[in-house]
Length: 302
Image (cartoon, rainbow, N blue to C red; front, top):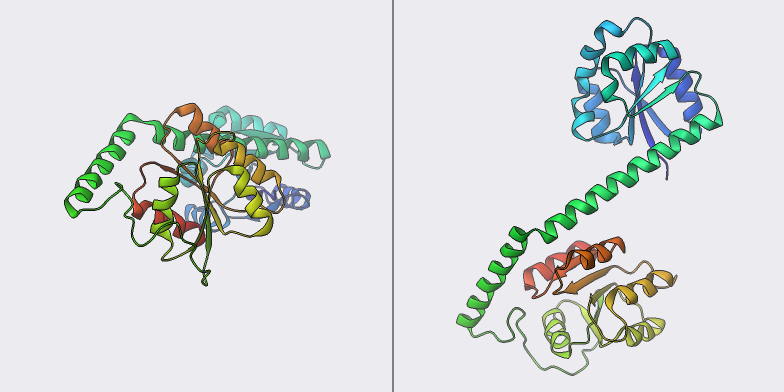
């Protein structure tokens, strides 16, 4: 991964030296300390870290200079301090709580570059972990689950009033017959519940080519001969569950890049966490509303 660094500061020779040395390994851009310039660079360059190259006699106006870094703080972009040791010390005395990493001059050794790489990698991992935890927290919050339940109950009432069958996905036409291939994207549904397979296939077949499999083994055999654009994968199945099937898909060069959306009625935190760790492209709680299903599919394959 190529990390992006945004450089600014008072001492141009330190900026130039850092740019020259770091540019061999990192993607660097420079900016002035004007808030408008910093905000613009952050928006379009999207740096992984902001490097401030400090100079001498800055102690008295450090906080004024740092006032332009509001977007750096807001987006939680790490602030890296670079400069002569004595100047770094002065800066840290005044605004040490803002600094995530200090690299004293001269910035030229391989060890310092490795330290910077390790730091940026760690920060990206922390950022990803935080994002996953926030997503997981949302999925498992009682209020969120209550909201889903209310929506589903509302749909059930509407379905009952309009005479729809099978709850949330209206079936129509004949089932159990093969649909001729037509131009467009292909979807493979893997679920041991044949009723759910029938409902999903009927709902999707008007817009997509659809194949179904009642087990991971059958699906993997199918994928040896055919290609698909998206897999809808049930979490709980006998013999091999959804995560086990996804693991095999990711380990196979021919199938590792196929987008996968989990379909499950499980809202257990540990199981959701296990799913998110495997990086599926989507996660839908059963019972599934048609609009949510189609919206998810459109976002992934169109």
